[in-house]
Image 1 (cartoon, rainbow, N blue to C red):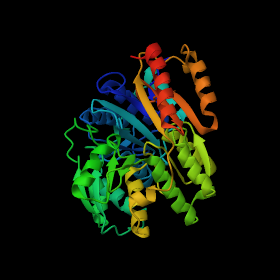
Image 2 (image 1 turned 135 degrees about the vertical axis):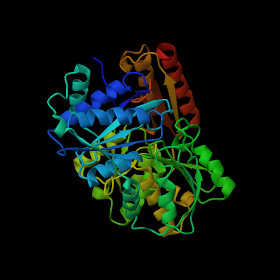
Image 3 (image 1 turned 60 degrees about the horizontal axis):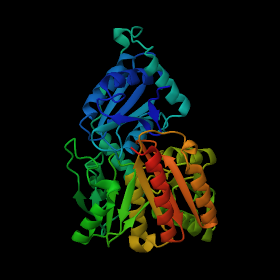
Image 4 (image 1 turned 45 degrees about the vertical axis):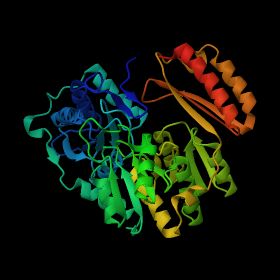
Length: 450
């Protein structure tokens, strides 16, 4: 059965199914139908995008589908994904839509959808939208000319999010901090620098000149070494590297050393714990987080909850039990007291606040955990059979787990957004990690590699 939705919305190469104007038009109709648009002004959608060239095409097609079914559309232009989620709530919209392929190259694009509370859709709602699009059963004939929706350009959308973001740290004065901000030529290229500058930080902007083609190109959260070089060059205090839609962030300290999501989660959890703000004394992470993070939290009596990979999985666990801090090693960090999704800017503000209030450098703050040696390999695949059916793989994984015991782990999974398989091996010895990662990757390359 054909599927439209993956682990993070609908995503693919622009102008190829399903990222075409024809499909986007039907998705707009399906969203309006599923969320119950029944007349003029009765339902509202917030629609934002990142800087990809194909965003113009998809924005127009989606808007046409939405208004044809009686839904008003608030066009907020280029904004981060978490800003769209926030504005959906603050503007009492029924649904929020973000056009982005996150960290993917410019010729990909995607459609992320949020409910009226700013959370990603449930599987049930995604399936309803998907069924209507694939069945082609929706028409707009029942919508009279006087009950069609309208599209409004919201000129002050950036300002609304800027004030919200600054408020999450109590408008903390950041003067004295020199920040190199890598905007990845993406959705935060304008408002990112403004937010930090308005709080008093000295900001050196990098990769903040999008042209529709250069998003994520050798920069941003996937390439933190780039901002690390700039930090050393400009003798800055910290490097902040956002991804294309600014829902994730990776840092570098003043030496250019990378500080990833695990260390950010560790320092923020310890800060929240010390201030009595860590809900249920619990941090939520995924299976990709380093065992060193678990060890560090155990030393301070902080409980850990582990989910499958994906910020959506983390958020669902947090909502279900009332936790307020969680995230991924990749840089998605969720501060549920403020946001309903990962937010790279809010995460950066929390880290800078911590540096400012403690007087400690990021390098000192990040030295709160010791990482186990770890290796992650991504391999392109020609097919995606169930992993347990790949010849030789189950036996090899069983052998690896016997060798590692409690002192390591092996995780093999398919990517939710790309035709790739990922192998993560972690243990106390770098040599054994390298050996087993190589053996498993070689088997997968031989059996299902592209």
